[in-house]
Amino acid sequence: MIHPSQFQAPWWARNSHMQTILAKYLHRNRIKHRRERLELPDGDFVDLAWGLPEQSDNKPLVVLFHGLEGCIESHYIQGMIAALHQQGWQAVLMHFRGCSGEPNRYMQAYHSGAIEDPHYVLGLLRQRYPERPIAAIGYSLGGNMLVNYLAKYPRNPLCATAVVSAPLQLSACADRINSGFSRCYQGYLLSRMITNWQQRLRRHPQHQWQGDLTRIKSLREFDDKVTAPVHGFSDAEDYYERCSGLYKLAQISTPTLMIHAADDPFMNDAVIPDASDLPPAITYELSRSGGHVGFIHGLPWRPNYWLESRVPQWLAQQWPPYLKDKNE
Image 1 (spheres, rainbow, N blue to C red):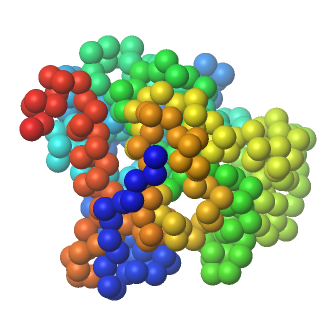
Image 2: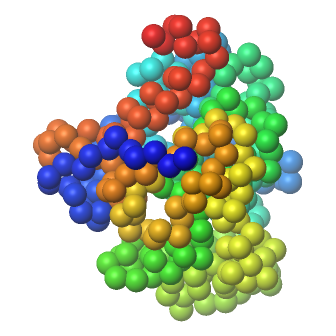
């Protein structure tokens, strides 16, 4: 079932681009964090960012996965960590490979279906905290990745998850972001991706991939020439088909809240699932407006970030009974 969202855009930010852009530039949260480097089984590493002050081991733990080229400085990560700490919960961000400010050791980085690093990290956190309830939140690319993870590993350490503004049909999203004003977002992301891959190439001058990154003009072209061959896909369409979460929703059994705005400028209606394809575990909330990871309301000089109230509210309902009582 698809539920209408309770989010209502304010008069001053009804446009999808206003929602998307202002959400970034009006945010004022600045959280402190502690870095932890995790060595991975294949010899590479990922960096965690633990929100401070750290909560005791009996408090719920929420793991965050950022979007394309995101990091601990991303406004939606900063805001959600602050919101989770207000609940008395511990928050930690897993940076995807190469997104923490230092190039990773291997050419392979991350993509929308790369689930093995999160699988390892979540398993490690469960070993460290065997009694601690663990949830996860995935944004945009990180949300699609989380869908892939939940479908692949139905028996996982998570008691609940939330997926926000996920590009569940990757091919359609690649076309949408390459049209109209959305090309501005594409250009911003593409410049960051090219810079990071140039750094990676300098560390691996003998790697077989040595194309001219500066000639790439779209995300689809980047995925076709870089993401796909470096990560074992035949081309962009092969990558999109195999990693789009839309076709895997029925396999999810972990309680999951999915939030999407119909006016998201990164995607079109192709990402919205048919209600009949949604399993009982998924609560899907669709709003008319909200942009891409926007969902701001309130007054322009004092904006509120609806995601920072809705997601914690929903997670609190999913905790084990003894924790629900403490949150009420």
